[in-house]
Image (cartoon, rainbow, N blue to C red; front, side, top):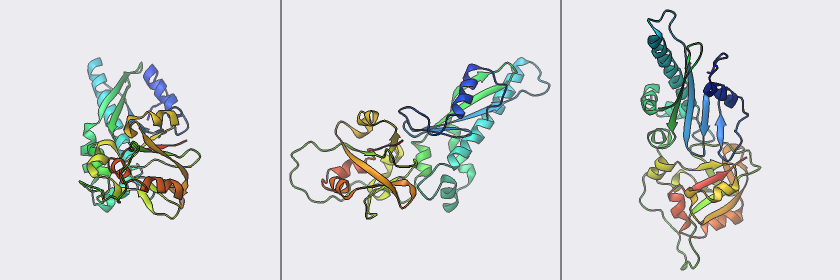
Length: 278
């Protein structure tokens, strides 16, 4: 945590950042936490740590080195807590996922060694601030994804007549007005509760590479996002499904548009899904 008395511009800005109500304003969907933040648009986590020098340092260089080491340890500890509390889906968080798979906290700590130092600040009182960043994709995604998301080479598709129009390249779900919370594994369902997008629809390598979905706050930025390509299919989220905060319901009509073309299963398979949220 950033303590009162840290006077550098970097850490002062961080303090201001921490008191912004969550999610933060702007095009990106950023979830603000006590120890840092999660950028659900660009797919990374940041954690801050602060370290103090020893009481009787040998010299200024020794004081700075010890303070930096303490700050890095604190940042890694905060990063670990952030990851453990990430929502896997509407019912579980990473810590629950770990318990179910009998995975040790040490395994997660080992993964987080790959976190990069993205900011380092030195203060007037000789304290040091360290900010670490870790991608949600790659090895961390592999760790967080449920085992039922498999590597699949093909998706079973319904038969369809020859398609004359340009195929859709991705899916945008407008969830404005819906109290939707981001998760590693969101679900999209129709009004009967039938799943239109979830673990069974994606291939694991794509979920690891780009995450199952991205979240943005502005429709304009969604429509220009490379994730969903040049011709995304756009549908409207009605509400969360049965109060599950990470699962969004769409109408029967919009569900039919998704199911209507076999080619649509291609972009679902590749996780080319984007949710526009408040």
